[in-house]
Length: 415
Figure 1 (tube, rainbow, N blue to C red):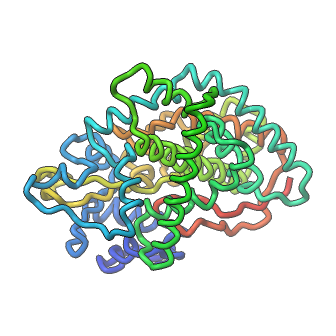
Figure 2: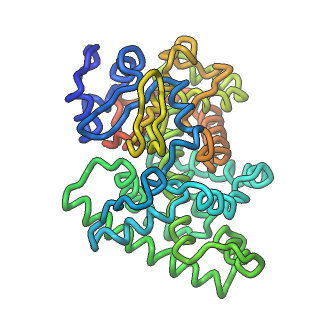
């Protein structure tokens, strides 16, 4: 589907959600504009799925308790649940322990046990730590003739931060890249090839074994990290994480705390370098780093969509979504809704107000949003200060082939 195409048939739309399309992913915004203007609540009958794109409707679905994450909470108790193959059970078990896919009260419990790691007090403590990391990485970039901003900076910064929070030794950080990308593909839910299944199962087994071993080490030799804190809580509380829940939570924090922030930083830098004068504007007014982060989150949302299941018949936008039907809410489209944002297709690093939905909303509002914002702000301010003349070496973005996460594989720059 080309950038110039303004009409889309249902077969083409269904294909977009069933398989990766390089053309569509390169520029999904004409498609989103079509959804917003022509099909804001679209039913794909053959997929038993609704596509919701307008800001008001997306916000409603995310906040309404009638839309749930767990299929068993959306259908009658006597209805048979979908089965999984024996080989896929380790992956399914991991995902079932992610708070991301749970409803209250399990979601509330899991979220509450790790929320202390993302409080304002913790963020204040992390500021100098993140700044030191950003400065160190910028020093490394300065020694390269043509650095890849993703590999040298955007990927490395959040990996170091989340690894340090969890207590992962520095020499093990490199292991996380392939593991994280594997689970990013799981969340996308498009690839079902034998190779994908094999890679996912292997990544699940490897990362589970890794964190099981690290947890065992912290039981005998606690340190100042999140795993040690969670283990200490087991000594004081009756409601604690099981070992499987703790392993799954560590994996979720790794993936969510790194994959999306890499995209945030990379997308923000490319946008700043693509818009004449915006990097200079940020260099002259460093305080704009905070609003620049918010605008990058809105304009090129790191997470493009998320899903819910209707637990009752619900009317949205004049259409009735039936109990048990899946709803795909398009965060990337909602963040370009002209009914919510003036000139939605214009990138403005000083935009205010900016009530975007990049971190979702409601009960599942991103737990790590304060950390992502802090990392993004420090990253952009540091780069603008150190490299005010930075520029792209190629105008053609190198996008990750993933319809759920929007970010770059590489971003070569000249300093």
